[in-house]
Image (cartoon, rainbow over the protein chains, first blue to last red):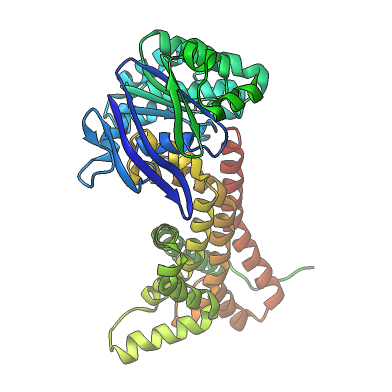
Length: 240
Length: 217
């Protein structure tokens, strides 16, 4: 379970998160929507401790992320995150990209890591690209590789930060299909996205962020069907 | 008809000088690179403000002509400290620091060329700072830094000619000895140049080979 309790976060004078309270249960798929600068991406990087928070608490399975005693590297093994930029390690093949952290962080044997990498790459439809360097892949393929790389760590939670935003439109579908597949398999996911149709289909709940505040959170039918927050109504009108 | 007093024995003498040049260069580039990596990583990691004292020292090594550094270092070690240290040791130490000063700049530039988003991805996979450095940042920085580093290594090889000042008989010093004896300066300098070329060319080609291989990634 991920518990976010009254989290505040600023970058200098700019308040990005203004008291966020949110709980994500095991197996839940939460999507976060909202305009740019609403704080939704920052929230994700706070959850795995890449960003500090000013006040409040974030607990992952009861472990406080920003406590001094927390071993962040250990915690991050549980939380996979995939970013907007796909971030393939360019000096490693696709297979090696997916194996590296398994071997170095999880101390898996080379053969175990390779088997798991092949399994995950197969899962995201890249079984024929194992020996290829990332520069030879399309953006969509690189993004799917990044997803496989995160999944190979056997995380309990997956965070997706606008993973389709940097892709050409014709490549968005293949990545969203991968996310749909994960959702259907019961992975606990928080997806920050601009894909409203996707949010509507896969989410258990959808949260709308506006200017650092979680303005509304509800089941997708309710949030998209009968939005209460006036800013959300405006946002939906503009994106439809 | 071309006529020379140069004997096979003299050529062996020159080859020994070339061997010394290669040896001094190899030692200096080896230790200079290790120190350069350490200094470069430190300078990148702690930021320009905290690194200022280190940067200053390295700038001193980069700014003062090598010849002056060698003479001063030799005088300092032997006269001031009163240590019995060979010219060879002084030469290698000074040349190593000189290499390190340039190398730390190259390393820092290489690290800065690695996108921060890539490092964030590595850390979010649970990798420690050291793992991120070892398996992601330095391999990538190496690719960026390689051409400059090869240039540095070749430069150090030629600069190593100056170590004659602390009584190390390397290629150029051997050549000068022969010039004094045989009085055939142009011919001997040509041979000396050929020796330099023979030991530099493989290094340059090896660099080119690595660059080409890595560009396939």
